[in-house]
Image (cartoon, rainbow, N blue to C red; front, top):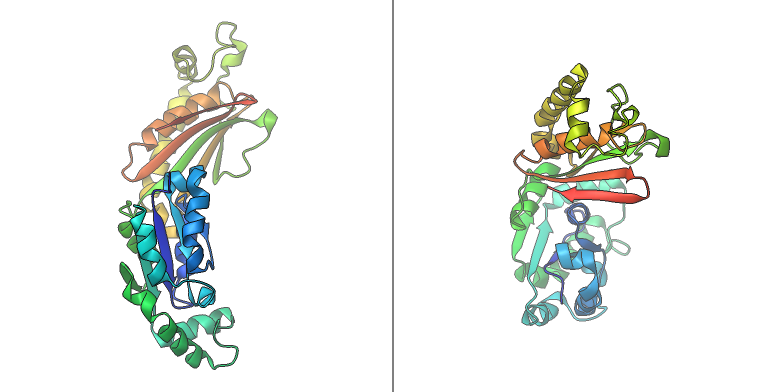
Length: 295
C-alpha cells in the first residue's frame, strides 16, 4: 500500500519551502528535504509500510539542488500518478526584492550564487525551475505573505481547517517525574485525595465514584471551570502564534486519581471547540502501562 498523499514542495530559494516542510512535519507528514526528483518513486515504495507516511502522507522538497542528478519532476509525476497516488505540487516564489532581503537577513549563500551574483543566481534558478512551475498544482507568491497567511494557504490546499490545533491533555504523577514536554503544567495536589479512602484507593479518576468524591471538594469545580474558560479563550487563536500543537499536562501525586479525572474532564470539553483535534493520555495510570483515548 502506498502512502495516502504526496505533497511536493518546490520553487525559488528563499520563498518559504522550509517553512512549508516544517508545517507538514507538524501535521504528521513524513518529510524529506533536498530529494532528487528521480528518487520519489523509490521513496514512496520504501514508505509503503511506514505507519506515519501511510496515515498522514509524505512531504518532499524538490528544488534546484537536485536538478541534473536524475529524472526531473515533470518526468516523474506521471509515473507516480499512474500508481494511483494523490500528488500535489506546490511551487513557491517571491519577488526579486524580497528574495534579496531574505538572503541578506539570513546571510546564507544562494545555491546557484557561488560563481554568480545573488541576482544572477535568482535569475538562473527561475530559468532552471520553469518546467517545475508549469506542472505545479498551486503557485503561491509569498512576497507579501505572513507566516500565518502561508500556513492558511497550505492548510486550505490540504483541505484542513486553517485554524486547526492538535491538543494533548495528559495526566501524570509527580512521583514519576514532571511532564517536561508540556506547554502548560497544572498541579492538582491541592484537591481532596481519594487515595486515602479504602473503597476508592484501587479505583481511578475515570471511575464515577472517584469523580463524585473529588467534586465534593469546593475548589474542584472552580478550578476546572476557570481552567476550561482560560483555554476556551486562547485556543481559537493559538495557531496564529505559529504553533499547531499544544500539550496540557495535569499532575497529582501518583497520577491515578485527581489528575486523571481533571485531564479527562478538561479534555472532553476542549474537544468541543471548533478546529481542535484532541487526544487524552494518562501517562501514569498504571505507571508502566499507558492508557490513552482519542476524542
